[in-house]
Picture 1 (cartoon, one colour):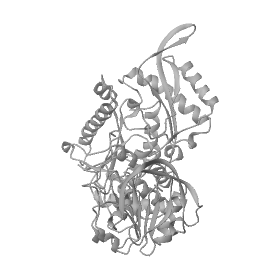
Picture 2 (picture 1 turned 60 degrees about the horizontal axis):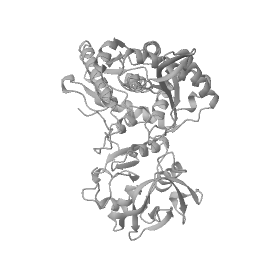
Picture 3 (picture 1 turned 180 degrees about the vertical axis):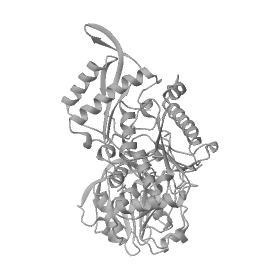
Picture 4 (picture 1 turned 90 degrees about the vertical axis):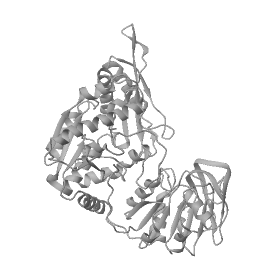
Amino acid sequence: MPSTQPSSGKIPAILVFDFGSQYSQLIARRLRSLGVSVQLVPHTFPLDKVSGAKGIILSGGPNSVYEKGAATMSRKILKLGIPILGICYGMQLLAHLEGGKVQRSSKKEYGPATLELLQKSRLFEGLPRSFSVWMSHGDQVAQLPKGFVQTASSTNSSNAAIEDKKRKLYGIQFHPEVEHTQYGKEILQNFVFGVCKCKRLNEIDNLIEKKIEEIRNVVGKERVICATSGGVDSSVVAALVSKAIGNQLACIFVNSGTLRKGETREARKLLQDTLHLKVKYVNAETQFLRALKGVSYGETKRKIIGREFIRVFDTSARGIKPAPSFLAQGTIHSDVVESARTDTGKKTQTIKSHHNVGGLPKKLRLRLLEPLRDLFKDEVRQLGLALGLPESAVWRQPFPGPGLAIRVVGEVTKQKLDILREADAIVREEIENAGLSRDLYQYFAILLNDKTVGVRGDQRAYAYPVVVKAVVSSDIMTSDWARLPYDLLSHLSWRITSEVPQITRVLYDITPKPPGTTEWE
């Protein structure tokens, strides 16, 4: 059953038409951060429902506009008199619909490029003549449509930005929504405030009000159970749903046996003592470890854990009276994208499955309620603070739903989990003691499967290697490895190998995303 994504029926200031890009929701996120009401819609969104919007953005996408079956839209959208900004594929489609020529580039652009402004444009007002942008395309606009002019170029794209000023139609080949583009925020500001004349809203208050309205409209007087782990996402969901429907909510905390050191105690204290939620505790460690026995492939582990969670919730839901109709989950947008699912009917490439993304078995007879699935981690944290969650909870380390099971490479056993728990606790403690916790998006340890030789007390030791990973990011759609001080890395290695006898080697992951992912499995 699909996730429940209600709408208030009000036309937002900006509509983002989705053509299948993994960054489509990121465009909406950037606009929300500017205090603009925005909605991501499929490229097939009826044009008769567009009236009232102050601006339209056409997202990027994986296709070529000239290919048979490529995502497109009616040319009538250009006659509505609403300002339009096409980004990457959106720019190429804009040119294609207007009679321009789009063709394969002789040199593709993937990554940083230097943009050179060629003439004045409202889109680039207040910006320097040259700056770095993020490109990701294999096609180019080779011939401009009638009425359009070139406003910027890059090394491999002569038409890196184009516009029809009279009709307020703009196209840019690069991605202003990603962190790697300099002045991306300013470009979006120039479009929504300068061109579209949008009004700035109180972002967080407006977001809370909107989410509460959506939850109440969908749930009505029905009961909801919430899957809570004490993590940032599930805690914010529980607090938000509780604020919306009060005693209609019951929370279930499942100990899968794959949690971090001390996590069960800390999570129960947060949920029960701080947030004052009704929480049913279920210790299912034996069940989960039995299901994972002999399984070494990460994607299979994720699916097994998702299945076992559903079984636990099914059993737990039967004991709640009156019977619940909804299951609330802390799914956020990066989970949705990596699982190749969107809310606009377009699929993206599967990176990895998330146990809390997708439908529920029909036999469970519950509907999914995922009020955070269009938000990114930094937005969820802002929401949590506004809802009154303590900073210690809001800034708690992000933790994957499958837990340490996907940070143990290979088969998962209780012994390996216990080893990893100790190493991970040291990593978190030392980074927090160094005062770096707020500078990093995530930091943790990974236990590898194959043992390596080492030396302990003049004796040959054959034990596990552990990988330390620390990343910097704001939304985890992209990230970079953190340049931790050498002294800190040295101290981490010494503590882990001294205090965890089953580990004799410590490595540090310096792979950004892409090409890597945050988790190893």
